[in-house]
Amino acid sequence: MKFLVVSDSHGKREILEEIVEIWQGKVDALFHCGDSELASNDKLWEHFSIVGGNMDFDSGYKNTQVVKLGNETIFETHGHLYGINFHFDRLLYAGEEVGASVILYGHLHKISCEMNNGVLLLNPGSISLPRGEIMRKAYAVVEATDEKYVIQYYSDTHEAMKDLYFEMKKSK
Image (cartoon, rainbow, N blue to C red):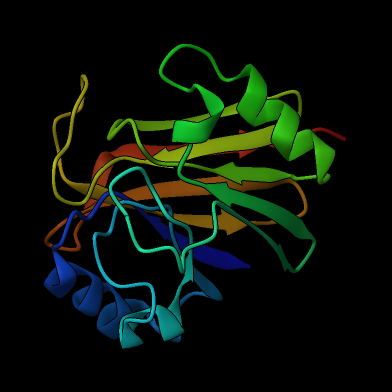
């Protein structure tokens, strides 16, 4: 099972259209973790599981989504309501409450993926305004198998960034 995660596009609709065009049919789901700055009823969202961020003022957005995809339970949020600028405790707890095996978030504009108590915690970075040590516009594609998660980050030109490839074993 494979899914794509993008976040913090901040009005850059064209890149999201490209992602749909390139990846539709190649992944099982597309996730947008907020701060799109698009209307919540935009036709583009027919292709995505979406949540609102701190820059999405349209009341049509949900703050969180829980998606069952194959054997995975995915908790999706922007993250700003969970104090992630300071720590991840509240975000991890929210994921734990719904039995999440994967937690997807945005807000920080920083590429990050790690296993935390058997849960994949992933930030795809920002497709428009990157921050942090890895200053590259990015999104992530995650392949989930019974044994592991394989994470490959892609640039805004849709090329795999070879140095941003990770394999993470699942807990037994």
